[in-house]
Image (cartoon, rainbow, N blue to C red; front, top):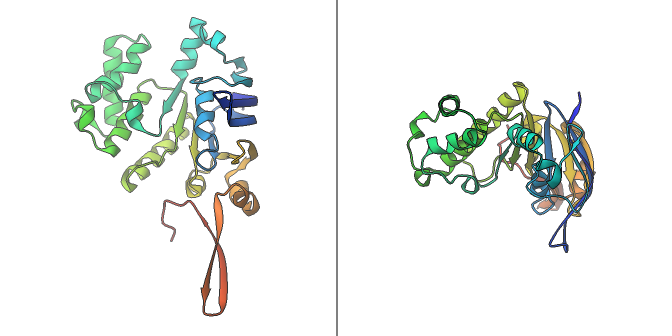
Length: 269
């Protein structure tokens, strides 16, 4: 399978002083489920921003199907439109991307920005409402939505673009268990339908559940290892070194017990 996204020797810092990414190299294949894991502050969100050309690296190359993604290349109307149309971004906080008066307005916004006819845009919006089971929210003002409803509407507003690549920052952040389960099953369904999914997380059980290919970011903002979910989850030494699991010591009488804790959101039985 061909690489749809490639990052080569990426460096990025905030204000030229605060390192966020150092010599990052990774590639994502078309139709792949891919995850970037690491602690908060390791550079996961910044990496997604660079992939989506929300910011540009200080050095290194970003390639989309082998074509350079730069401020200059995106000014080319054809390439810029193709890039934006084929890539959708779901932010960690849905309030960042919801700004229209009603839910239906939110779903119409992206298709209209892509110059789709109004009737086509409306049809897409209606289909997406139905697909996500939120038809009842159609005329609801955005400010009257619950946190879980906002997340579903944010997802819907991106899906109306019908993007080929979906970037998702911390899929489980601030969601109730029911919405978490809904979102995870949705990602699986979209991936089975052929969409490329790239998401960030620090929850190791999400990696176990979705079985993506994984890139591990260290607290030094470098990629320590890339591999399958099973390769990463079985590398205890690696996970300890990047603080995704930690040793817990407790005593029963005179006996000392040691075991490892990690960032889990699902109950294991």
